[in-house]
Image (cartoon, rainbow, N blue to C red; front, side, top):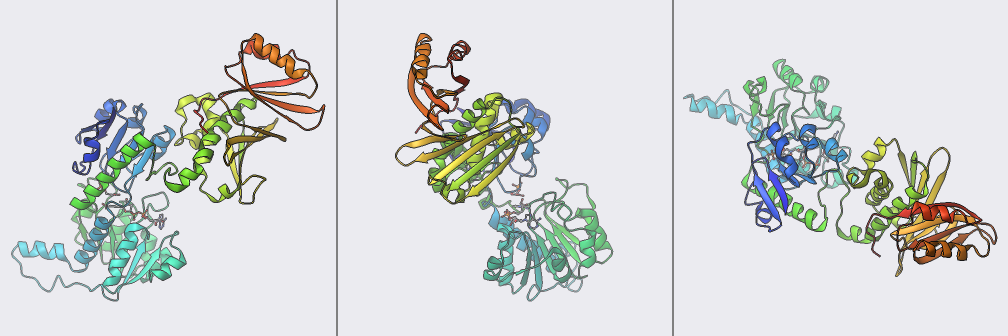
Length: 533
Ligand SMILES: NC(=O)C1=CN([C@@H]2O[C@H](COP(=O)(O)OP(=O)(O)OC[C@H]3O[C@@H](n4cnc5c(N)ncnc54)[C@H](O)[C@@H]3O)[C@@H](O)[C@H]2O)C=CC1
Ligand SMILES: O=C(O)C(=O)COP(=O)(O)O
């Protein structure tokens, strides 16, 4: 039974598939403080949040059994994702469940601000009939600057176009083709500052976007500028905003999000030229149901089928590409395990080469599997696909990836090289049509074997009688040989023997094998990962 805790208010109707599932127990407790959550989190396999609960390193350090944190929404800035990643906890979100609601809320804010609706409403409720003070502005033929042209930004742009607005957009990922097709003009942040009558921000909060709209920006702005933020508090510098409004550098603002939430104690909510809502962008019946359905179904899929659709801190694992890559994924972990056992000391560097068609695919999952295999010998189960690269970095090991879509003898070829100051080792692998995963190269030795659970790699001088002696010693130690492969450069020259054996070879067995004249170095490789062809 998997245990899931829901700590923010989330549609129970949307969570129904999880609540009704026989393999899941769902506890809903939306009143926990940090200390209380820290105390109970080790009981849970999955945690569901919205933006309210801060998932801190403190909580995560106690989350010994937590495998998944699911954000029923988009922004994950309330979750310490780096810390979760280091601990191997998968973070997922529901990236499109609330897009329409946040888009519509942004339009509502623009319209409410342009037409003074909240102020006029308040005035009329207080008994006034003032048609002069609340004269507004049309959107028609005005310029809207969109910073962050993703799902919501483009949704706002499309709706604003239907009001006859011209759209300028800044987003490093907005291609000129897409901009042309969408009839949007790409612009720099400065151009947007200078030319816009309205501005809306729709980026995530990142070190790059924090304070993106600041005093310098407002100094470039037109005095009639009206600006909204339905993305994240902090993208617009709050102090600079108040100053720009007070100094008449810009006209108005509308905010749904704040540096500190709940925003009970800030001049922003009292300012005459700012209209405010308490982070309501995603607060509709429809959005809440959609995000809840999305995280509930994905949690089930992750625990039951290991399928991840909306990973924030891991490569995606589903669909056609995954089916194509699956044999390589399993082979790679094994290759990493073999590699580290053939290497005497810790590597300082890994080089990973992808040759052939596979070079055209997203191979990040394979890279992580190779690294996981390498680290697993020392770090055991702690290392997983989420934290493999972080842990590699922590071990002071760098990695490089080389991709070449030209064939390297095989239609697909993956090579792992482990390097330190003294030496390096290269292991080449492929998946052969009809034959499955194969190791096809060890350093310069061409080989061809299917990795098995227990193997011996013996570097020796090629000479007659050596195999018989080895068979005899293994027999004396009650070790059965399942298969044997030889790679050699020339007759009588240096050679590599690879044995699959049915049981683990003891240190005593290895030391007896060293007595054979011509055996130079012997490495055991015992594979932890389950390996299927
Ligand atoms: N107020 C609310 O209730 C809600 C707020 N949001 C917030 O809205 C924001 C956007 O959400 P979506 O559109 O769904 O995300 P998205 O991921 O579809 O779009 C974000 C866009 O920002 C762009 N971007 C990233 N860094 C940038 C930079 N430095 N400069 C310019 N563009 C940059 C990305 O390229 C991407 O196109 C998020 O911060 C999210 O948390 C989302 C839903 C509800
Ligand atoms: O999805 C987002 O990023 C939001 O900001 C919505 O936040 P909420 O789920 O309403 O707390």
